[in-house]
Image (cartoon, rainbow, N blue to C red):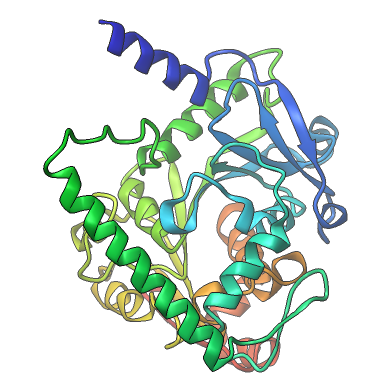
Length: 352
């Protein structure tokens, strides 16, 4: 009984039962380039998630109407969304409310990306420039060797620890790993807040137009909940399930799709490339799907100013799918337009 009580309390603090209450707030890159300056907020009633939304939400809704919703899952299925902060802030500035897995965090976004890019330099890019203007150079041969030696040492230590743990009492699993259902839990929280007088989100959300979006492992979490009828489109960033099993998701989940799908992949240098191609081939003839491939590798352009070109593509897809702005479909349906806007990108589509 005690264990059940503690678990219930932890769930209540992750996705709370009280009205939304913003207790933390920051503005990233002057609030984005869209018509509504965005903000990043932490909420006392939903401490396991971070919300990206337009500033002065009520005023924006009064002028524009209720805003579509995005639920987002992180790369590596981390319980932290800092690495996608530039993109999510940019998307929110175009009139979206995005709830991302992971508690509010004010860590330096550029410091996060510096480490990612240094260890996984996209060789197809001529130059990597971060949003703060800092240039990241590929590792030297000496740095690469040192990294490989360090990784080998860590694997050896992990193997020794695993062998030792078999002889001793197993350590309990961390109480809060991320899991696909969290996307549905935060969507339910937003639904409750939208219906509750006095909430910051009361009558502010268009819950008939919801997207599930995830990067890398987060894409597997998106596929894991894609059966939910509330989700009207899925955005798969540097992600694909292929023949893998990840977060309880397999290729069988592709049979549950009922909504248009968008895959944004980083080309052959993206570790998700092969899996995404298999997904594309396997998705049924009744599901519209677009796949764009850049030369940015698995790290996309998330570290670039305002989330780079990946953010531009995501906004266009969401504007088309969730707001009915048919003019935004040109990037996905017109090869000449794609070549004009992003000459190095390649696109395929089916079932349109």
